[in-house]
Length: 323
Image 1 (spheres, rainbow, N blue to C red):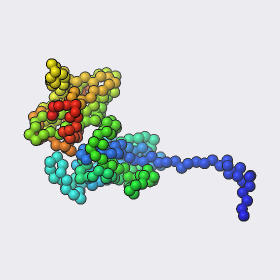
Image 2: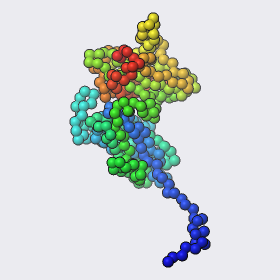
Image 3: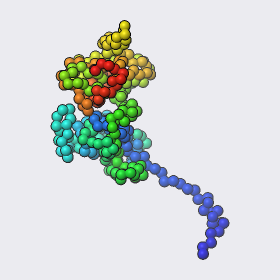
């Protein structure tokens, strides 16, 4: 029989307990999304044991098609293309091949710094509840690699893994809309002090030649800015429109002189109020497609934005006009 003396217990009781430090994981900012346009923003919180990150590679999963990476100053982009396992429809055409991986290299992200890497594409042929894993590899200055490629078995928490692969869970469209504002803010399109988030366009009816676009524009600067003009390659003309009640009739008219964005404030374009009016549209916007738009600001300059097309039912309760 072993004796456990009081002296021994006292000695053990002063031994400090130190929890093993947890490692911050590479992750996606938007962890849930409905089928359609999806901006995958990868948060990279550290390097490799003190070394800076000099390359970041992401393998694109089946079901994420038509990918386009966002350039980063000081980094070069390499895109590996190949065949998809299936054939999909994208912008009204069948596609069976496209980008399979994206690598950013040539830059330097210090271990003490944080950065984001972005790829925009379309979620297609996916089902509610499905997880799409974007397996990633960090390469650091010594050549050491940190692979984020572990998939959690069904029912298990991915955070329990040492190197979990970033993933997005597919949800129904109405569920995803609740999270659009926060997710879009995280991946907002910016220029100067101006950022554009929560951007979308409404699906159009067959034969319709006008459509509506919506977004939130925020100005973090100390002076007001103004949205002067809008253009899109899919519309002959784009105007900023206002809507107001006049003699019990909803009147829509172009906004003259541009749209002012107050210093430190924001303006929301939404159904039933200020909105973008796409005119002379030859091919009606289809749900799941994307509408590229160029916004010209007086001070911030040009901002390129892609508007995912959502159901024609979106916002209908606020806007009786189908545009």
